[in-house]
Each structure stands twice: as C-alpha cells, then as structure tokens.
Image 1 (tube, one colour):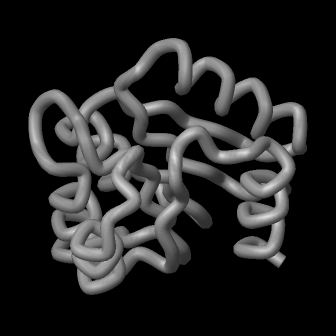
Image 2 (tube, rainbow, N blue to C red; image 1 turned 180 degrees about the horizontal axis):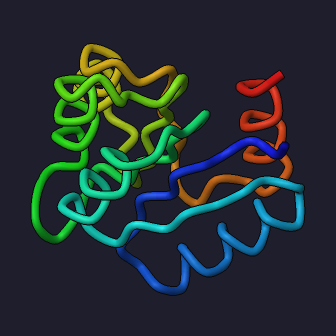
Length: 120
C-alpha cells in the first residue's frame, strides 16, 4: 500500500505539478485547494504526510493542522510550504506542529526525498 499524502495548495499550477510529481514517485495523493477542503478531507481519511501551504484563500493554513489535531486526525508528519523565508514564519509553523518548513519552490528531488523519508 502506498503512502497517503494530503496536498493542501491553492495554486492550480503548483498543485498540479506537485501532485503529478508525487504520484510518479508512487504516492497516493489527495488534493485540497482550501483550508475548508483540507479539514473536510483530512477528517474523513488518515494521511501519512500533509504538505501544507500556509497561505490559503480562506484561512491561515496552520488552522488546518490545528483542526485536524483537535479531531484526532492529524497526519503522521506535516510539512509547511511557504514563500516566506523569515524566522518568525518558520517558528510559527514549528510551534503549530509542522516537522519542517519547505521554501517554495521546493526542489523536486528534495520534496521526493522528504516525503519518502517521512513514510520510511
């Protein structure tokens, strides 16, 4: 059984590329394009890894992690994805329960390695 990845990303171009990349790497990927979608999907299914854009149209992406934690459905590992490289953003993501913060655009090989290691 392949590892399940919840990809939370509102940009169609980025989400399409990441989904294709991860699926070609053998992962089962489910896409959510808003925090509301992510909470709904993540509340119904268990995921090994969540790749979480923290800038979503309807809420701060970290609220997704908080909501799923409250419901007992927190993925085993969550990586925040952001275009912000400042220390405050990084600290906020780590404090919210993210394993690490990936700076967009995330290099392809790095992303595959990180997700593979998270489910190993």
